[in-house]
Structure formats: structure tokens, C-alpha cells
Amino acid sequence: MSEFVKLSFEEPHQRATPAKAREAVQQLLGDDAPIAMIRDAVLLTSELVTNALLHAPGGCGLEARFSRNPLWLRVDVSDSSARPPRLSETSVAALGGHGLRMVENLSSRWGWRPAGDGKSIWFELIDGATRDA
Image (cartoon, rainbow, N blue to C red; front, side, top):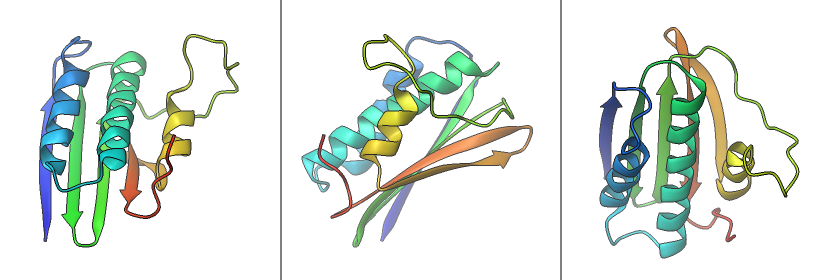
């Protein structure tokens, strides 16, 4: 059985938006998921929502699906920019530019697709395939 949550954050650049997204994903996972999965899901959700708010005009959307058996989570964050995401070659000493690298390193899989006039960036966490940081 899987569960689903869908949120729309219409107001751009609201400081509370990443926190609301983190809370929604954490509530969706509940106490059933391993702590490493919860930790990674909350962190990666926050990164994608923050990137959407920083790099695209307007708000963003979040869709998350969670299955308990098999244990699996997929989070999609959509925004209004059609510009493809790119992994930056940022120095580890830099203050920013590490978000997609974290998504790549901590998720089981990730990618993006065109969505309407913008795009959707997604990640999946699969039990047994999540990477411990």
C-alpha cells in the first residue's frame, strides 16, 4: 500500500516553504521508515524546494509518494523554470552549490523531466539502496 501527499506553494520566496515541505514528507514517512531514510528524505526535500524557490520565478509544487512494502519514497518538486538542473563543480569550501550533489550522493535515483512550462526534479529512496552519509 502506498500513500501520497501533494502540496502547492504558490507564494514565491517564502522562508517557511522549505520547512513546510520537510514537515509534510516527515509526516508521510511517519515512524515506519528507517531513521536514515527519514533524515535523507527531509534533507533532500529541503534542498530541492530551496533550489526551486531560489532559481525559478513563482512558487513550487511538491508531490511525494511512500510505500511501506516494499519500502520506497519518491519526491517530485516542480517549478516554473524550464532550465535543466545541472550539477555544479563547486569547491567543497564554497557556501553554496552543493544541493544537487547531495541529491546525487544520498538518493537511490534522481532525475528531472519537463513539466508544463517548467520542470520537475525528483529523487527516490529505496530501502537497502539508500546511502549513509
